[in-house]
Image 1 (tube, rainbow, N blue to C red):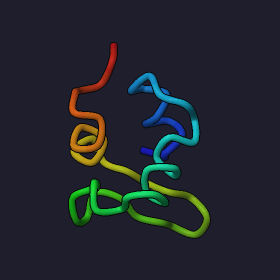
Image 2 (cartoon, rainbow, N blue to C red; image 1 turned 180 degrees about the vertical axis):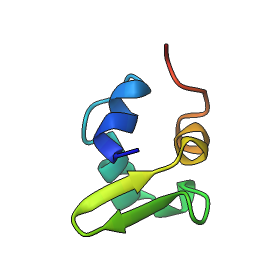
Image 3 (cartoon, rainbow, N blue to C red; image 1 turned 45 degrees about the vertical axis):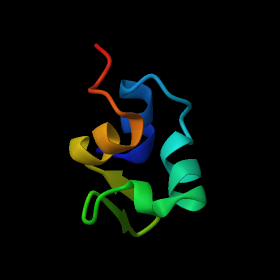
Image 4 (cartoon, rainbow, N blue to C red; image 1 turned 90 degrees about the horizontal axis):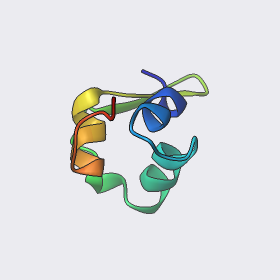
Length: 57
């Protein structure tokens, strides 16, 4: 999913993933975040590792 979509699904600010990636990229497990062109893509596993919880319903 896109970084913006993931952030909103986890109840975070739209730029949350980019901020964390910029300040502490090692929080994302290897292979859970990727830049495709200008679009940042993050996996569910990556978001759970960074936030410490599952998706907010």
